[in-house]
Length: 285
Length: 285
Image (cartoon, rainbow over all chains, first blue to last red; front, side, top):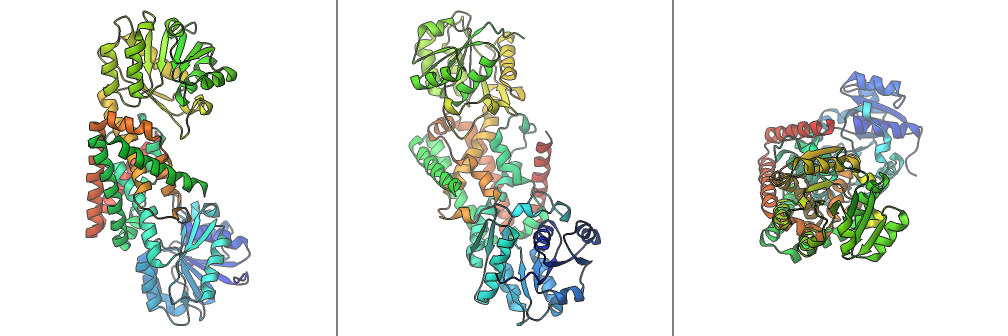
């Protein structure tokens, strides 16, 4: 273990994810502090005993004490925060994040960052359909994946610390991808699926769907309750990879449509068997 | 109640659905018999005590005793069965089915049926990713929807009996649609969702998806494990409605794609808010 429980951890952005990080890390005995927009979130986290101290907005003293800073902010707010406040960071501090897109964030932050501070990026793939520190719980990490996305600028120590953080938080799997690989993968497994769910939920204005649906429609639209502010930002920030994945999906959908139109039962059955095999393999893991 | 427990019910096709019907109805005290392809399914159902008697293939005597016959067969097998064996049906018998498409089945069967027998069609919207009587359980009906699809040829008594059957089986909601409305609705909520899941599971050959997925990909591809024989038949049997629904979906997907490409954040957020509202309404019901 590289991470030492005597380390001082600062969470910037005490929402669902930030709060869940705080809960998990405080339990290990780390000194956990937090900065966030609303004083009420700090109050709630103090009452619940998941942080040791906290403040609204920016607090140079709290920032200057932290050995490890976790940014749980929207991408553009994270970048602005670094521009304006990196001067307060402790020399030698390690910073990490939870941002769902990487290329458009990682290189920009590493480029502008002070040379005596290191940024190692990560994407904890956990969430809920509800928001805010009031809904935070480290249970969301169980069974979930955590992806570290190092670049050439990162040191082996920072990469290892970031992996350990994922394990400490309780993630079931810690993987490593380049920012480019990450964005392509996330464009597929996460962003494309959200695009599909939103599309499915809005493409047919039928009023009484709930009287006629089975589980399939319910499953495919669970994520159609979506944080429009966050996801529209994430989609734009990963535009190229997402558009590529949308086009792959459409090309395959068109193939299936042509088979249905032409009555090509053999072609359909081949595609369905392939789908069944891939999904079964997935279930085993 | 029109259905009388002294009635003799015959189930033709003892798979997952047929077996689940048998279990539910036998519990009420109906005399339940079954005909199916494999003797081993009959043996299993007898041992489990969910049918009173049964036979492999066609048994004129069993057929002739039944007041109510439930067909739990693939569409084309159901139609063939009627052509070949309706001569054995008891005068005045009522027949119903579980077929997932209606227009291509209901009119054909009603057209060819003896005048002294009535066919009232229904679609129990329940299922599992596993097959066969060995996996049958009437628990799959709890919380699910049952749709009766009468035509002008049906009598009020038959419609009422079919609705009662849905309630007896344990469905949470019994609805009524014309065969045309049913097929359009099912093209949307069930067939389109299966097309999407199969497409999503096969559009990107990435090998290690499971290391990088959250719940969203898992949810959207659960039904990608699909019975290729049954679903390819259902898709073809409902081709026109399904193609219409696929095109509605694609048109909306293209709108979203254009917004992402053009950086139209306001447009995206509008669509996402609409999606969130519609899904929230759905959750309440």
